[in-house]
Image 1 (tube, helix red, strand yellow):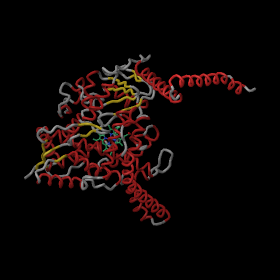
Image 2 (tube, helix red, strand yellow; image 1 turned 120 degrees about the horizontal axis):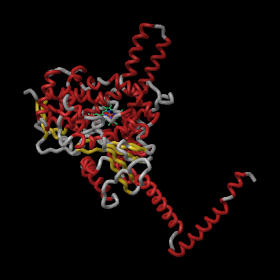
Image 3 (cartoon, helix red, strand yellow; image 1 turned 135 degrees about the vertical axis):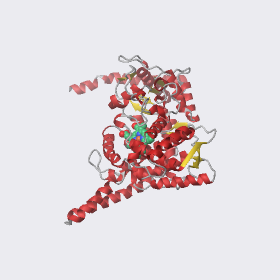
Image 4 (cartoon, helix red, strand yellow; image 1 turned 135 degrees about the horizontal axis):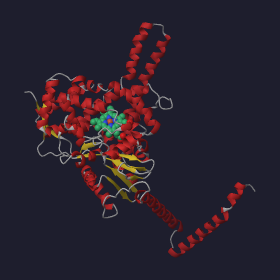
Length: 549
Ligand code: HEM
């Protein structure tokens, strides 16, 4: 008998003994409890499975590890059930950001450990720097994040790690560099539509919800940048795509929070919404593919022709076509395996860049208008700067933007208090120790929050929750140490659209202030909250006036 066969024979008597024992035991259990033995076995196995899984998790999270201090658990009176309840309640009531900020008073490195779910939370700037930069490779987005966002983002840049992410980033980066300033050029049509809407509101003596206005404005500017044509959301207050997009983000936001319990999040409309978004995006992708094919055919024909004069002229056109928008740029490139991107991939790419660019810019414009409306002195100082550098009616150019130092301070202070992506979750690949000595076990989810870190009194002082653009002035800016401020993320995954976003916000603000003044409706208090990105639950109620009679 071969050794392999001999090895296989050894456990057989033992296994048959175990099987016999289980069968007899099943029969006796059935007799005793008159119950279905298979059902009893199923219940027993399931209980055992969950008990073991829980033991393994709590072991990972709680037992003093050899190399670091175990992270203290958030104080709880009822095995974390009270914390879970408070967290869900705060999310439903729209106070979640405040709730998480209040938790930071217990400590800057914490963990939750409800049954079946454990989350590490790191608020200290050095921990954030460690995860986003120094040990970046150890903190990818991870499998949970990927699974939850997959229906919305597919395998796009936001929802991928490793080679797939690297390739998309490398491809998109030059396009952002080339077209960085196009954000400004492309706003012309949309800004005139905004003026029309605001003029109408003023003449009717109405209040305007600028959050709604900017969300339609930024979808138009972002789609213009991404695929050339804008969706004209400023003309259509109710857009099926936008509604489906918001609903899906809400569901994904809930799933990310509940993580292990994501199955409890109702998502009946999700597949319908994803389908509706696909139906909107697919024709855009298909028309871009048709354009690209036509361009390639033209190029082939040209290479056959001997007419050198035409060749120069047409090849310039070809280059222009290739770079005219991000979709065209992707179409003329290949994936990490050297293959052309398929339709689904391109659809996902659009979804990702739309999510990245639209709600974040909406949030910035909404809250900068709020902060200025609430602080008239800051608005006056900013207007003085605009008058002295750009003037009362001239369109700003790239050099003007560089000179507008106080405007940059105002924008940074807004991003500090209202960062568009207030939370972020990473996945720990291998056991790790944070610079403050706390141990992160392999397989943990680790959250950081720009919202909380940007407001920590330990770092920003007692007035950390006050809006004060002067903290960014030349004398005080030195006090802002690395990773106290990271609204655009940091390290290899830093926001690609950062300059685009600054340029667009500055241009829009200049044009707006050259024409209008505004104030916040008396008694109105915004309620910032977040699904994936931050927004104000009750909109942003402002009253606009013409600057000049
Ligand atoms: C105020 C405006 C903006 C803010 C505060 C912001 C913030 C962020 C943050 C925090 C991330 C990291 C997200 C994560 O990894 O989970 C990010 C990533 C990204 N952002 Fe922005 N963003 C803004 C505007 C834009 C715009 C206008 C675009 C493009 C049109 C853009 C494109 C991207 C892309 C492509 C990524 C993914 C980068 C990667 O994973 O490698 N962002 N942004």
